Length: 114
Image (cartoon, rainbow, N blue to C red; front, side):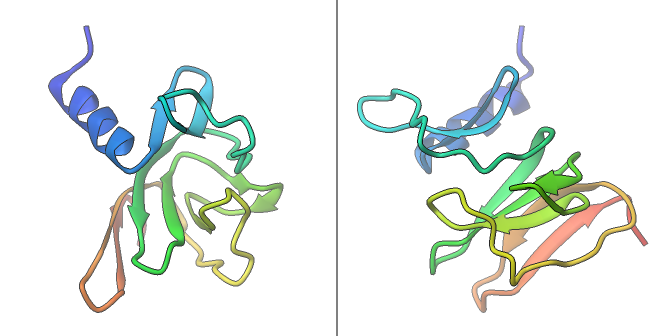
């Protein structure tokens, strides 16, 4: 049985059209709920959190080291089509667990980094 927090997390992701499921780290649902196979950000492990910015970029945080074949240690950004934003390349020295976007567009992250 899934925990309530996992179930809630999946419901939130479905509201924005994204879902974390099984061995597929990140996918997008289209209408009427089918998986959009064209969306493939190539995240090499599971994201723990997402933050969608008003202008469209999607921030990913989690236990991964690569997005789209490029090094991204637990923190990266993709465009709505799933391609990597190569201009966003922050560094983290440990795991990042969650992210949020402030009203002014600043990105907040939390995790086990210094």
